[in-house]
Image (cartoon, rainbow, N blue to C red; front, side):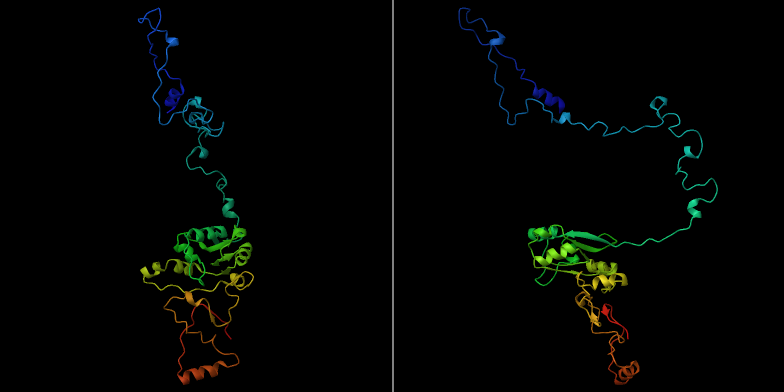
Length: 320
């Protein structure tokens, strides 16, 4: 390609053909080559450049020192790393597998084994960030199928439309406020974490947001229910947040989904799988205040009213 560019940049070397001179010299004499008219070259569809500028492909170079030449050890004394390859004489440092002397103490018990362990490692919950500008662009471009008028955009909606991919260890999505100033579409979103700018921007545009908790098992059952059906397992029921996260989802300022619940209410009944009987209640949590336990058990056993079994998951109630 370089040779082609160089040949195209040179002037035309086509031979010139002399025309017969008209005059006293007679028709047999020819004009000199300097006065002959050159033949025009045939037209080209795409004329190549006539000169090479500073931005030609053959002039592209890296900055000086951008690429260091790899040192090849053991390639002769003249290479600078020959004979011993920079490892010196015999010993542990010259052998393969030498990891340094930080974990060694010359035969004694190393410091790593002698010093006790301190502290602990706390697993951090990771969330996938979703910006408001991305949500608005997905809705306007048609990539995100908006649910019904009352149904919000959830993590399952984004997952089913292949807009997000949650790897193992991610606890859900977090709604971020980037692009909130240009938000014009009213959005109803349910996320696991919400930022304060995102809450203000969505509500200013006429939408609503809610922070909803999913345990790792419940999140997997929500996104991939076919994985449980394939193994013949029942889909898990939604669980309440752990004690350290319970207060976050009970605050109205953070738009928690537990802010308006009362003892005995079912948490998100629309997400319970079909095999769950929502009419069943925990007998201890359903006991009216002011009644003694013995009287209530006597009426229940004598009247034969029956009552329903164990307590269902997702009940927010306190035992008396």
